[in-house]
Structure formats: structure tokens, C-alpha cells
Amino acid sequence: MIRLYNTLSRTVEPLETMEPGKVGLYVCGMTVYDYCHIGHARAMMAFDVVVRYLRRAGYQVNFVRNHTDVDDKILNRAKELGVSPLELSARFIAELDADLDAVGLLRPTLAPQVSEHIPEVVAMIQALIQKGHAYSADNGDVYFAVESDPAYGKLSGRKLDELREGARVAVGESKRHPADFALWKAVPSADDLGWDAPFGRGRPGWHIECSAMAAKHLGDRFDIHGGGIDLVFPHHENEIAQSECASGASPFARYWMHNGHLTLVDGEGTPVKMSKSLGNIVRIRDIVERVPAEALRMMYVDTHYRSPLPFSENKLSDSLGALDRAYIAKETVLDVVGKGGGVPVAQLPETGVEVHRLAGGFIEKLDAAMSDDFNSAAAMGHFFELVRAINRFGNDKKARNKGAEALRPALAAFDAMAEVFGVLALKPSAYFDEAKVKRLRQQGRSVEAVDAKVAARSAARAAKDWAQADALRIELEGEGIVVMDDPNGSTWRVRVEA
Image (tube, rainbow, N blue to C red):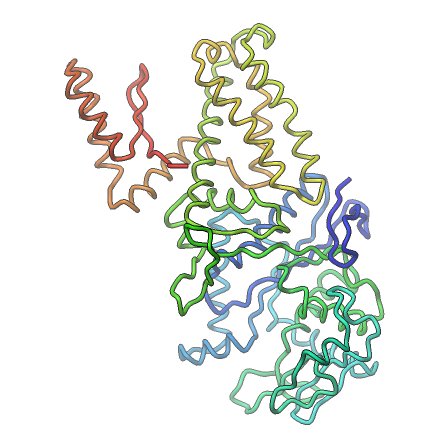
């Protein structure tokens, strides 16, 4: 049975879905006015793994992740660039999809956009007005009346009295309570982006959009709602209030899942603010330009989704090194199992017995970890215990030549890692080729230049010019190139310091 932490109850609960074998999941997506950075990607990566594991566990997942394409940030950016807001948002939806495809995220079942759901937004606001939960203010905006909902604050634990004391009303607002929030924003002129509605021309407030889209595509009640921890209040709190008050159905979502923040830290581990003004925004495409995309995925899944994730170049390098070691292990498994033959496991040295035991037990450990609140960090710990055992066994040439049966169960382990975490999905040769190109490009070098030097060393070896061969090997090692010799010739990789 899968158990997950529910922010609403503040406990870990068994997953009991409304329909057996089916999960309705809504995750708040991006406000699309710029490129996606690695902080945005934290939530999307976390729920990508959730969806992957639920499907592996046999659930049919209806996964909805929205695009916010109507927002003040979009309007301001579009004005700066001299384009229409919807033209700008369409461009960055395409850029977002490209970035997420590059790091292997599954496409959601549905990716609704606010601009395509205005009738649903208007209908929900009308229902709230009719039931006394919303009102039109003097400035033309429509607000949700938080005092009309006795349950307001149940997700975040905040009390209305505290919100009254800590809130303030901005100039031009006509709220009845400082915590009342905009459902509909009046537009100042016909030239501004807006839609006609019974309560005046305007555009949706931020919170109402998700309620309207979730209700349309998943119903008034569904299983799981997810997003970043920063969305608990006010966004998700407001979603619950307006959704349940509009429909009369409760709970809006049975389980609320929230991922921890990604924080930027320097080489000393000191937190650093990521901002445009400091010029240190780290975009997904910036990372994928420099390292294989799976290294970024490895970094995310090596931390539990609810825990803070500190990002630094050292951490990325560590993930890259771990990925290298895992692909070396996969290469060993495919080579040894592919050759077949060998002897029974019991006749192998202890390294063979150990690797067979760890490989055979990995799937059970993976399921135990992931069924316990999607604990990817624990699953990764078990996997790298297996990787270390495979690499120890692979370095024993005598055992390696006889170890097909010992390593055969590891094939399922690598398949599971690709299915659940989206890592180790490539052929080892394809991964190492990608890594070569990207690492050398960062150093201002090319694969062709290294190939030429390795070929010169091979020619020196063939001519038995051992002094020249050794000199070239030392030169390559000094450049971070590891050369591997075998009867078929020489191959090479870029060394990763981790």
C-alpha cells in the first residue's frame, strides 16, 4: 500500500482513491512569461516521479498540470517586449515544453491554459456570488469573502484574526476583510486583456484559475493536489475555500502534497538569492547545455521531495559523478550478461554472491521506499549500494568472466530506475558520448582533438614506441582523460571529479 504525507492532515496516510485503481492528480504549473529555472523544475520533477511510480504500481493516473497564461507578470513583460500577452505566453509554453522534454519529464495527461477556461472561471465566480461567498467591490473587482467560509485556514493552520492583524489593504482596494482575495480583476480599458462577464469586463485572479480548471478536468472532488511548499498559503488555501464554497462538495482534494524549496548555495554552502538582478538565475537549459540531462534528474531524486534541496555546482558535480559510476555498472552488467555462460552463483567469489543478493532484492527495496511517501532518497541509497557491488565485481576479471548469472537480476534494477526516476535509460555508449561532448565543450576542447591524441597513442603502442605511448597517456591524464585499453583497441572518457 502506498502511503503519503498529507499537508491537510499533517500525517502520513494510506492512499485510498475515489475510484479503485485510478488517481486524479492536479499540479500547479508555471506562470509562462520567461524560461523555466531549476527552482521551478523542483516541483515538476517531484511530481513526475510520483506519476511514474503510481503508474508502475498499477494506477491509471489522470495527471493535470496547468499553464497560467493570464497574469500581471505576463502583461507587464509583454508590454516591455511590445507583444500581445497571449503571444508571449504561447512562446514560453513552447519553451517550457522543450526544456521539460530535454530532461525527460512525462507530458501531463492534460495541460489546460487559463485563457481557454474563462467560461468556467466566470461560472464559478457567479456561483460564489449567488451563495454569498463573493462580492463586487467599488473598484470593479470581485473578491472572495473569507469570513463566509468557517473552514478557511484549514490547510495552512492560519486563523482569520491573525490574518487581519498581519494583512493590509492596498490603495484602491475595497475589501471587507484584509484577507479577502481577488477572483476577478476589472480591466481599466478596452485595450487591456480582458473578457466580458456579468460582473464587468476583466480577467481572472490567480487563485480561481486552478479551481476552475481542476473542477472541469477532474471534478468537484479528486484525489491529489500538488505543488511547491510556498503555495500552501495563500494559493492552495484559497483554492480550497473557493472550490468547496462554489460546489458544496468537500474535500476539494483529499490529499495535498507539497515539495520543498530548491535553494541556491555557493561553494561554502552559504544560501544565495537567485534573482535576475544578481544575474545568477540557473535555467534548465543552462544545465542541460553543460551536462547530460540525467545528471540533473539524479540531483533532484537523490533528495526526498519534501526536503529542501540546496543547489550548488559541487552538488551537480557529485550527481554527475554518481551517474558516471552507475553507467559504468550498467555497462558491466550488459557486457557480462550479454556474453552469457559462466558458473552458478554459489561457485563465484564473495563479490559475486553479494552482487547477486543485492540485485535480487533491489525491486523489493525500491517498492518499500517509494511506497513510503515516495522516498526517492532511500531508493537511491539502495541502488548505489548495488552499483558499488557491481563495480567491485566488474573489477575482478576472473570473476567477471564467469558472472553472468550473478549479474542477471541487475537488468531489472536498471529498468526500474529508468521507469521510476528517468535515469539510466540510455545505452552506456550513448551516455558517455553525450558526456564527452558537453564536458569538453565547457573546457573549450573537442572530441575530435582528443580522438586524434588517443589514436596517436594507439599508433605508438602498435609501433612498440612505449616511451611515446606513455608520454601521451600522461598528457591525456593531465587533461582529465581516462584511457581504457583492451584487445579491441583503446577507448576514453572524461574524468569526473566527485
